[in-house]
Length: 255
Image (cartoon, rainbow, N blue to C red; front, side):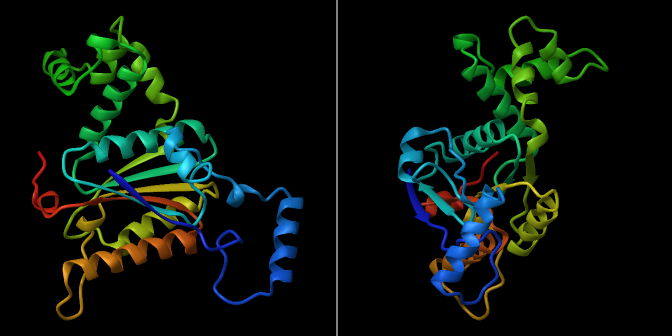
């Protein structure tokens, strides 16, 4: 996998477009720090030390990080764990995972498996197959989480997930309907809570785009990337976008 970083170019959180002298920017920054308004200066560590080193400590408002690689190398699992890490570590935050590849049930299953592995369950760790078996064998009127809570080994998995569940939003996206404008509306709705925000898009080339005339695929990708960067800057949020680095990745059909 490869990572491209489009760094934030703003100093002021949710800064309006326009011009200011350096002296004015210095005065504004000084006033913000003096009043404790420092969230937009603060980095969100990703929980992956090598990546945090590249990002100078983590993700900052206005940052767009593009994660690329061929199909099947684990981009979705990596980005889902990154979203999980930030939701867990940043208690005063909102995280949204917009997925064009999988539904919310599948992402929940992945999170449960992830927590089980992180808890050191070893060979007994939850897998998608084990979870599907638990669902199939659950008695009537007994939910999956009830089954896990009553299991000697997996009760702590549910507890681990509940530590950040209210801060991590899973959004099932459509490759025909979930446009950049739709993502933008979801973001600004969540921003109304007034807390820092982190957005993951899985993945960028699946975002539908009405191209005027005939645009090449690379040009459409560039325009969508620019749109995400503009969203990061205008909303003062952090964004991670997954991209397929090969055509076969774009043509794949996940089940």
